[in-house]
Length: 365
Image (cartoon, rainbow, N blue to C red; front, side, top):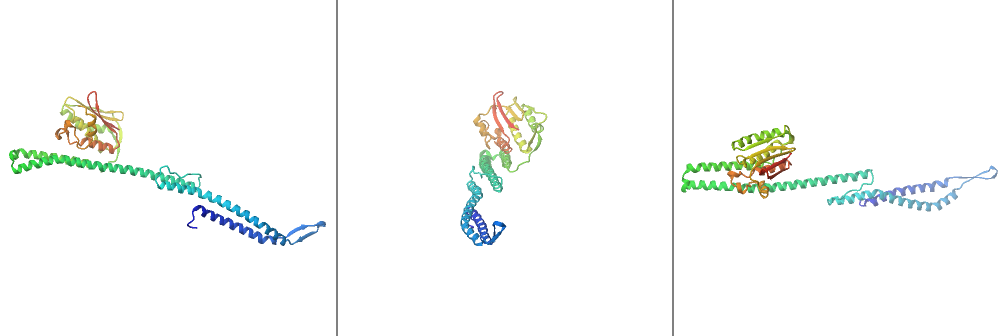
C-alpha cells in the first residue's frame, strides 16, 4: 500500500470500509431475520401465531445475492467518485509543482475550492511567486556585482597606465642625476622637479584610493535642505571664480527639502562645480540654479562634442583639447560623479548649450 499512488490508495481504503459495512450489515440481517416471528390474523378474531423461521430464511437467502451485488456496485461507484474528488486536485497541484521545478514562469496551481486543498494550492502559488521574485533579485544583484567587478578591473588598468608615465619620468630623472648625465648634474634645478613629480604621484594615488572606496560604504539618507547645502558647497567656488574674473551666479529657493545621503551628494556636486569653474574662461559666467526639482549647473565654454561627452565619464579620460594633467586634471572628476549619482539612483544629464554656448549639467532631485 505504501508504494501505491494516491488515487488507488484512496480507492482501496474507501472500498474496504464500504465493503466491511455491507458485509456486517448483511451478516446481521442473515443471522437475526430468522429469529423474528410473524403474526397473522384469522377470522373470528383468532390470532394465529406461527414461527416463520424457515420462510424468512428462504426469503433472505434469495434476496441476499441481489442485495450484495447492488451494494457492491454502489460501493465501487461511490469509492471511485470519492477517490477522484480527493485525488484530482492533488494530482493537479503535483503537475503544477513539476512545472515549477523547471522554473516555468507560467506554472500555476489551479484553485477550485476554499478548503484545505485550495489553501495548499494558494500557498504553493505564493511560495513560487516569492521564489521567482527572489531569483530575479539575485540575478540583478549578480549582474550588478559582475558589472562592478568589471568596472574595478578597468579602473585598475587605467590607474596603472596613468601611474606608469610619471613613475617612469621620475625614475629616468633620478637615474640621470645619479649618473651625472649632462644637464641633470645640476641637482638644485632638478630636485624641485622630482619633488613636484612625487607630489603629483601622491595626489593621484590619493584620488585613486578615494575613488576605489566609493562603493564600499553606503551612507544613510536623511532629510536635508538642498538650498542650504548648495549655498555651503558653492561658497569656496565663488571665491575661486572671483579670483579668475569669472561671474558666479547662484539662484536658489528659500528651502528645498529632500532625502539624500549628504556626503556622496556633496562630493558629486562639488566635482561638477570644480569642473564648471576650471573650464570657464575669465569674463564668462557659471550659473547654479533650481528649476522645479532639477539642480542645474551651467558654465560658458566651448561646447563639448557628443562623442566626447560619452567618454568624459570614463576613468582618467581627458579630452584632446585638455589632455595634460596640468590643464585637464586627473580625469577622475566626472567618473566619481557618475559613480556616486548612479549609486544613489539619481538621474542626471550633461549636454551642450547653444545660447550662450557652453555646457549644462542637470541633476534630477
